[in-house]
Image (tube, rainbow, N blue to C red; front, side, top):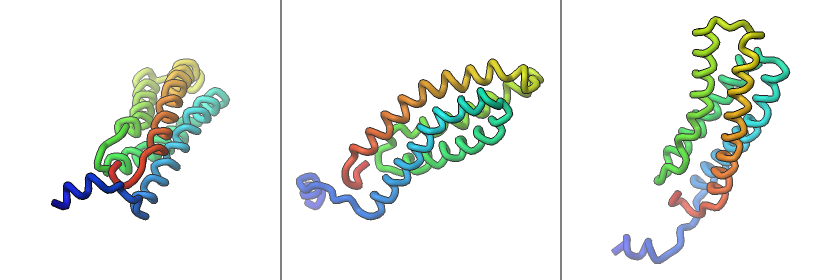
Length: 137
């Protein structure tokens, strides 16, 4: 009987769901900014990927963690992408024994392409999360 009644009444957003939604929105904004800032910093100084890669990997993992624990996993995979990009860049640099000057062109290109694509994906995630209501997300 309770299940039938629950379907008829709108869900009210609790403080727990509001806090979690706010965290995910904040992390998504940081990832959106990272899509813009990381490639630009890498163009200026390629060695900056040693800092920006792990930082945005951690932000992405937190994003993955908070979205994964919703009742419906909305876009949870996209939080892992910064970590995957960091691992790919690390493998490319180490496998090819690139110096910073040799890594500049391929790594910058990868970051620019991924940043452009991910920018639109993270903006759509932000818009989707912003439109969700109640605790049933």
